[in-house]
Every structure is written in structure tokens, then in C-alpha cells.
Image (cartoon, rainbow, N blue to C red; front, side):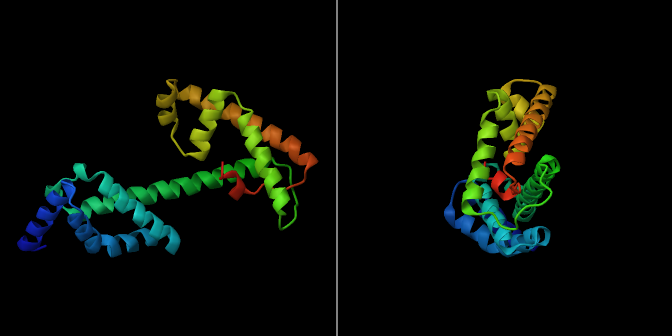
Length: 200
């Protein structure tokens, strides 16, 4: 980067740090194509890449006061994009893990290819009620770890309990939900669709 461009970038980042929208638009115009290509390389989906790109620039704007103009824009933008991609891929991994956990114990070996709207609603309500039947703290742990994707440490800090206690609550919650769903699904042979699970 030439000295002139470096000076322009430094000036724009200082302005952005001070909340100038024009500087933010400059940053977007300068880097949105590069960041989109970077994100798409990992997620392989146009809608997902577009959504993550939007999230990246929202985060940059909201955290503009923490920008260090000396370090430059490119490295900062890529760091925010990398964190967004990591969070998304981690969320997808947790989703697949949750899918495996429930399907492994559902006891449903075969099911219709398509569920009726009524069956979907019944399944949603069954899962919703099962989660709500958990003791309050255990319910918070389950929702936080398995649905919101928070770490054990984050939930421990939130609830003021130890990391091991969080793990114990989660294990007990999963056992309870597995048992309840297995019992109910014997009576109602419905395939456990994870796209429904993730709504809660």
C-alpha cells in the first residue's frame, strides 16, 4: 500500500472511530467484495454469505470505538469476518451434534417422507413441552448450551455455578428429554425433524 493510500485509510478509520457514516460507507465500498468472497469460500452458500457479510459490517459499526487506525482496516475486517465464519460453522456443528443425539434415541427407524402440518405442530408442541418440563436451572442450561450455543464457561458465569455443575445439568437434561421423547414417539411414530428442534 502506498503512503498516500495508507494516510487516507488512517484518516478514514479515525473518522469511523468517531462515528462518521461516510467513513463507514468508505470501508464497506473498499472491502465488502473481498470479505464476501472470503466468507463464501467457507460457507458455500450465497444467502448465508450475504447474511454473514451483513453481520460483519453491523459488528464493525457497533464496535467502531475499538478500531485501531494504526493497524489498518484490512486486518481488522478479516478478523471480524473470520470470527463470524467460525461462529456460524460452530453453530452448524452443534446442530448436527444435536441431531445425532435425538435421532440416536428416538426409536424411529422408519417414518413418512413428509409430515403433515398437524404432525409438525404436534411434534413442535411435544418438544416444547418436554423442554419446559425441565427444572428451571436445568432448562436454562439446556437452552443456553444446546440451542443458543453458549460454552460451559459462559453459562457457568451467567448462573454463578461451576463448569462441572453446568455439565451435570446438561447431561441430566438430555437424558430426561431423550427418555420423554422416546416414550412419546412410541405412541406417535413421527420422524424427529431437527429443523423443528432448532426453532426452540
